[in-house]
Image (cartoon, rainbow, N blue to C red; front, side, top):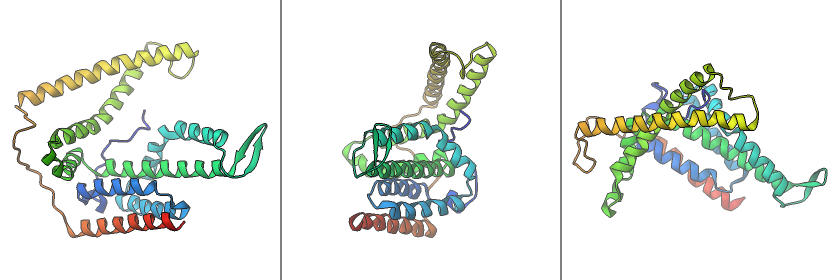
Length: 266
């Protein structure tokens, strides 16, 4: 659980930290779309260089990014095995016993791994450099036009912000419960399959109870302060678009349309 860093804000004063949250959220969406363009390794290389530059400017430790990738190792291994054994595209390049490995399967597996790495880096950089309050404001401002069709913009932005805010809290609670269960003789790493299932159940049940209790406490606190999501609200903290935000979104748009163009050429 110590390896899960998604949702945790890392205080800093870098240029990436100071960027407008609306810009960072919009840039994330554009780059996530660009990742799935079929632009080959040239396109992925350009996105990778952009992400690497952004990570350096944000001053986020690479160790933190690597930690955020550890929970995805199992998924990467599963997708790799599935693609290598079941995808039949291209020509046979290797035989693992009676099972042929195709060139298209290897290429598709490489694409999947690169896409997952880029997605994790992008999301980690967003959550590490953006405060939950700024995230809420940015989401609400970006979705503001949807109010005209009756979409509950403020409520959705608040729910997303609360979910991101409580991810680190739930991770800490999970660690506390695991230590308490370990002190009572529960072993999460060894034992039979049935014993591991029982150990997981002994972790999940108190975690759910704690999560529901925290949700109830938060609801009571908001209600005691007369929180009304449909009321007209003012903001003490205002978002300001600066000249370097314009430069940043211009670079992101250039990269987006460049990758889009490569997808038609390659």
